[in-house]
Figure 1: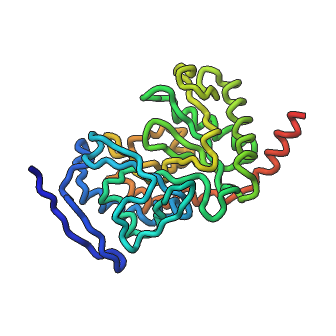
Figure 2: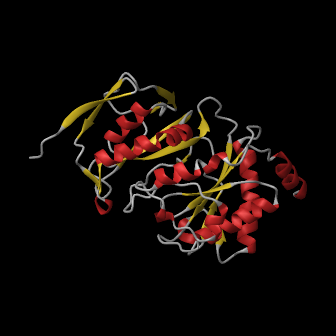
Figure 3: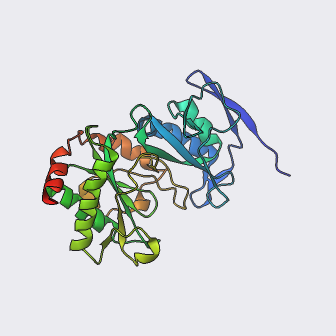
Length: 299
């Protein structure tokens, strides 16, 4: 019978309980809970920034990445006094707004952090537009080629964007926007882009929603970007062998064939110190002219 080891640490003036620090969470990388919490603390300035003002869903792996898991939307019990929550749709969401909260969740083996597209403060008008490139195959060597083609198309439309690995098999193209369009209006732009790509590169892209009908094509998912839906947060770890982290990239890295697994919990801190947050390199922009162009062309 295993014995639970518990202790507490003071973090920003708050007492956080840590249990079983030697539990192995990523066996292939030798990452224990203690190492995970240390790495989470290093990621906290960026992970907190991208989860702030969002409804948070985590995925918990009590016995590590090779064990069973479950989604956690409702705030776990008992709730420490430093944890704030926000209710929506009958769910009491954790507000990931401080390092003590992040480490509390990490101690509960929340290994993945998924943030809502809609903000708590303004659920109607998003501050970014995201295209999710979702491979139909478990291993997709063409994902960076696909991301590069999407980036080229957006650039030709005058849209600046940042590519981001999912940390799993796919990639996302993130465009910071001025909060002036609704999710529905941004979906119109996404549908236009996805349909164009599927028509021009029919052996690479599809906008077919049903996975069973996609073959080996990469799905340009413009529908996921919507109120009430989530995306893996930038700089969130993924509960897969290799401990990959969802990482924003330079376009030159994409065109050079960057590998998703090259960015992981053990090296991401060095990258952030060197590169900073690449999502800050593109200023929010207006997509109203693109929407007007699309609507004009459909008349």
